[in-house]
Image 1 (cartoon, rainbow, N blue to C red):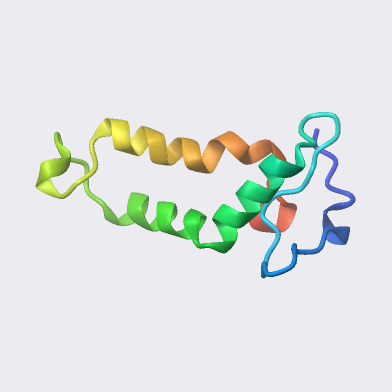
Image 2 (cartoon, rainbow, N blue to C red):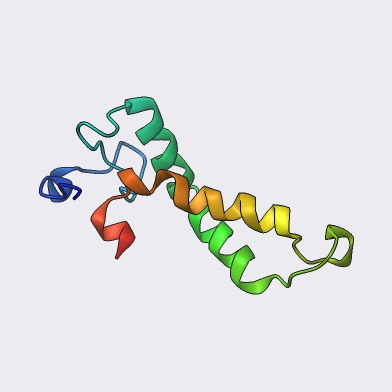
Length: 92
């Protein structure tokens, strides 16, 4: 179980509008990792990945304008690998 009790006390970094990731003791406390996930989110990275995955069609090759299985896998990892540090509001 992830302790989300202090999520509401975490404020966005200066220049950021939203908090996407917070430290999770003892799972992940890397300030650099948390910063990069928040940067990616505030630059629209999560929205872009979701948009790509929801609108693109599967294709055997990228040449057809669709996404092949490798590309879908990489995009999925962008959304799922940092799940342990996601802020509860971002998850919702």
